[in-house]
Amino acid sequence: MENNWKVIITKSDVEPWWFFENWEEDIEKQWTCPTKEEAVEKFIEELKICKEKYPSIKHKNFTTVAFWNPEEIEFCVACDDDLQIYHGLILMENEKPLLIEGENSLLLEIQKLLKG
Image 1 (tube, helix red, strand yellow):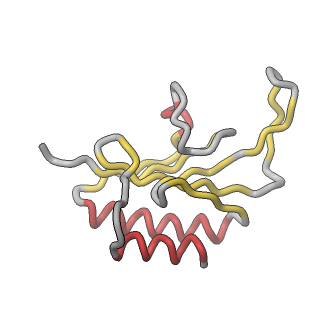
Image 2 (cartoon, rainbow, N blue to C red):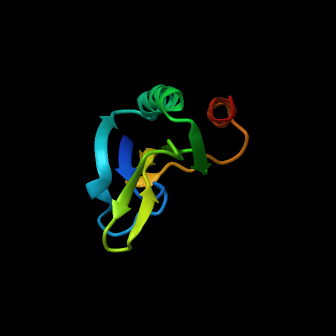
Image 3 (cartoon, rainbow, N blue to C red):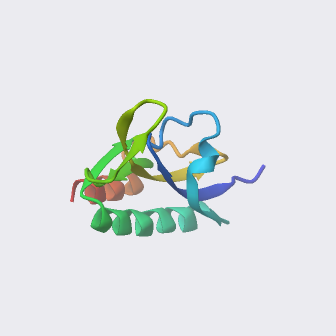
């Protein structure tokens, strides 16, 4: 079976790693890539763009990243409260976030970008 590679950008009032029911409705952009290398390249490109646009960042397992601007909030009528809006960036392998294990160059590159 061939692997399926995607880079996804979401916009939601929850961080992108929650994957609640119907989370796909939060997808703003999506790229399907034929190889892992091309998907990683696109992910890193989008990571750099988002880091420039949003002052706050948090990640889970390095391939699921939430970006936000503290002033970007939306009022939720149902919960009668303001909710933070998150812009998510996800590197997917076979419809799941890519899990990077062990010390490798990809992990080191993403760590450097997230910290820098």
